[in-house]
Length: 455
Image 1 (cartoon, helix red, strand yellow):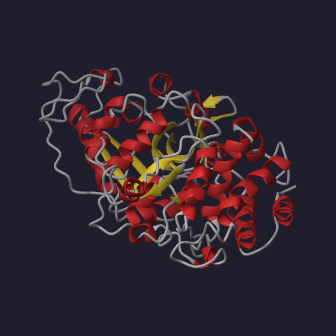
Image 2 (cartoon, rainbow, N blue to C red):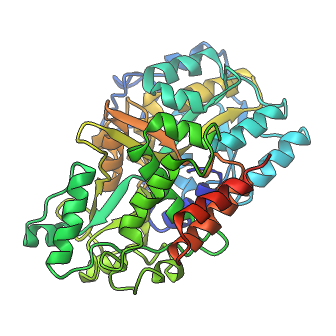
């Protein structure tokens, strides 16, 4: 869901969190008062079919989807297509493949692409468009995106000034996990600025605790959680414009603004007073798996863990994840309470065919109706669609994520390492960040990553 490299790591974390096989009742299309406004009858999932009549009679037609979203996450997706199938008589053929990110390029170049692909990274989207096999999104889909998504999201689906791909799902990485009970017992309050986060961290130390726990081990992808930390702090200390320049290499990786962000992260992660609660010293971060890293919160051995919304999947099944539960999360604050930089990821719907049934289904997936339908049959899923009703989401973390994404003050930016060339984003950045955690200085780290940038 979440960036070409991020998609794989996120799907692993999500697998245990999703509820599947949820009942999904259908009524005859048009039998309720449902409309494209997003209202849905509480006893049925029928939708207003009129937006799809303009594409003509598509009964009996088939639309193929190719995606990296596999079992069990695929079940809610398939369930959410039923209203469209009921309305139009078209059928959706879903193919999930763990090797999607490489195979979709192979298929496109070979002239055997699917009708639609769910692309989890803007860089991969650009590569697919460059094959010459992708087609621009229909006007109806473009209009939906203009209505229901922000300009930042539409820009990620645009290549060389042409709009190709509407957003689908999303995730939020700018979260800090904590124990609501500990906060209540010790009188801690959720910070609303970076200064308050620093104050909270120091207060936990004064009270005899270790504030932070972290882990970056992830097999061949070891290091990626540090890159997320750095990206979050580039957004906060340098700002979105500098972030964009950095990702595009319009400023070098060893620019002082990027070094400053590393040092801001190091203030937390490379400080033995602050880490690694229940797990060891600073160096233990490199050997602790990202899946295990936040679990010491449950035992009171640490208080804070910065990790994405999908981390919910890693807590034991009987853990209550809620504002009044065993575990919850708060938004990683900005420099001030009004600044709302958000780091995250998502997928985009790219077409390789412009048949009427394909256009109709693209239009459905870009609507507020689909977002609310999907919300009602999913857990561990959220969208930046402005028509999404937060109350339709299944769990508190999804609701929190949606609230953050839909905040009018939010400035969303896609995972930076997922948009950089592979030699940097999924190689040098990961590896050098790991070296940095285990003792390498900031200047050497950013200089080494800069050297890896393709000439």
